[in-house]
Length: 341
Ligand code: PBG
Image (cartoon, rainbow, N blue to C red; front, top):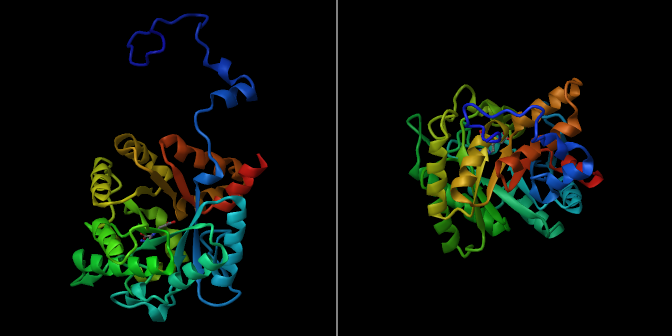
């Protein structure tokens, strides 16, 4: 039983009879036995939006990523669509004067996200739109929920998230993606969407979202880093030491009506993707978050890593873990690389 790694004393043949290298000899045979592949259909592109016209603001901690005003975003989204990218995920940078203790701007039907959805649906109708549901872009304290006596309260927050989901659906969003990690929010949002006539709008739940330091650059991008200050999100986002708990979260979200689930961050949490996919067999996505993007860019910029190769290898690792797709800031670049292959 030479190929049983559990055999304590394997019968070793020398010279070896079984030679795995035979299947690695040439490109054609490697292609023939390759198990996983990344295609453009696997890529979801997260984008940052800002107010104004003809404005682009580079994000210092995410080289190559810019916040765009709606007019410029439309051009970028057209390019993504032409490359075959199936969907984008929208993230607004809310002007500071609209941020409040209770984040009311989140359910203003004329807020930046809703105006962006309508503009994209009018200009580029054949690309999917995914919208985050959480209050952090809108709260003056940078938390994803309402704060009462210093505590991020659950049920009252969920009521606001339902209103936020409905205005986004009314604007034309295809997929609602709750990223807030409040308990019971998927079921409540499903009900709110159905009651408002949006039973066709899907829910992609950030089911296993960890309290991670890899989100740092994103908080710069949406301008919530200063609001959050030294606080953290550990009372609602998951403890990085847990993975059985992720299965419990996913089970709840599916029972409450989630159509798809997500794990976040991505690369350091691919074991969680694999366990979820194994256990539930539902569409499962990984989010290669801002910190993962910035790490790879920084190493490549120093000449320490080959940028194009690590982009594609990192995305392939999500597929190998069992992900059906990846949210990645590299989406457009990766789509171009895949096209050139
Ligand atoms: C907001 C949200 C965050 C991200 C996506 N949605 C940040 C956070 O929870 O603090 C992070 C994405 C990234 O780092 O790329 N709830």
